[in-house]
Length: 232
Length: 232
Image (cartoon, rainbow over all chains, first blue to last red):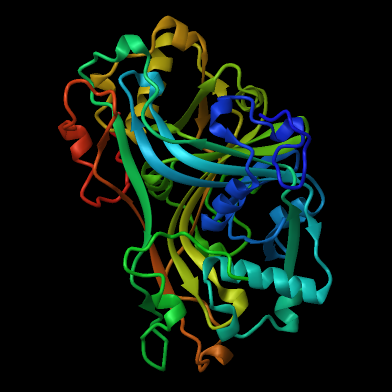
């Protein structure tokens, strides 16, 4: 994927995170990794539990070179993540690819996969920054308007930091990759775009003080892309 | 999650696939599993490679009680999936949940996680049915219009069957779950819906015979949900 020396600003310093299939779909640009992580709403966390892989969806946040995850101290998956290797995937689906041949159907997508051994965060100030990053990732501007974690909540929450050094980015875009011999096929070929958009805010039924959402929530409506800017 | 005897029509017959956190977010209905699998466009496949978990996004198909995956015979992840346990997650994100307290921010989602040991499919007719299911899952109606796999393509393709017996469904919906003491907070609480929609078809630049998409492609446009009906 790259024959340059691995640096903090490039991806895939190890064989495990080097894309071996379809090398033209990989990217060495660190900015591409950040862009995918910042746009995604959820990640899929893979851990080893009782000797077998387990994949679970979860929310996350990013600050600089670190991805943050959190969960209940009682969750087996999080305990497994604290004591072993994990893999985290964030995938953005951009289009369904229609080809002239069955084996060339595909998706256009942007995907980031991170490998590493997460570190549990114990320092109170660091934990607060991490939890803020996670909340702000899915709800930019919300953190300063809500009650911060209290001691009981904090004690029940595991916060993990995963270094972004060992990561790979894979992207497919554009038209189907049909064989030349198939180009005169009568089949339709092209892409059907997949859009992820946000609808108007829906106030909670128990919202006593009226329903209108504040600016930081309203700013996300009107069919805007779900792209999440890292504001923390 | 359930204290009834495990049957083919219910979920989670083993401890591993029994949802232990937030039991109210689990569902025993087999129809719920099928609905999530049929609506998803991609899954996240978790395998163990060189002793560590690896998560990759991929397309899939379903026929009855079987999930089908495919990939290049040269792909390390697929080889790992052929020889060991896997975990497959399909996640549909429905809304971002804004709460009055930082620790109650969440997502509304529907998620299916399947565990098992996939079987490589070697029978030619079975392989063709599986590949058809995968193509039809993302592109309903397309299979009969395109060139089927030839011998060379088939020889280069691994097809895996994963039984759906060991699966769990987890769902969160509705308003935030705030603490009673936070209900008089001035913070806004509610949900911001997340929609996945399909845009108008974009013909491939090398489409010689004109751009208009046929009915099976056009039927998916006009902001329709990306929900994919299993047609195979």
